[in-house]
Length: 173
Ligand code: NI
Image (tube, protein in one colour):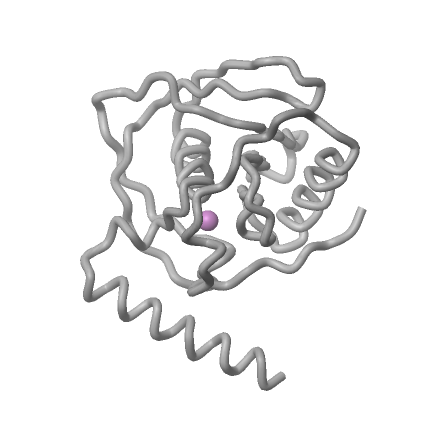
């Protein structure tokens, strides 16, 4: 396993819809392992392949934040929301591609999601609470959408300017 570099917004790869996975290969398994390692290392609760520069529909997540509880690493390939609740919920979201910036985003409170697992089998689960918010945020990444796209233009531009500045500083080293 190895850590992958997480792209920082703005980057065209974060705005590009990702392509469906045709079949589960060893390369895809390696990517999933690397993504989980990269997510835990960050640390974060979710990571989508475009965030490490791979435009493929795969995401990883683990929303178990309590260190006393066992971790639940999940790998979702070609995930699709099959049902969303009418009830909405607001959560203060962040993103590993937009470090240290947080904003409230309103989304369906619960969703059902169907995906393929690393054995090529289809799974479906009803997600609630933080898991529901996280899986929707990560699926958005696969569609080239960021949580700041839900914010008012002024707020979005302010965050983007901060990120441009951060990237300049990081490039300078
Ligand atoms: Ni994100």
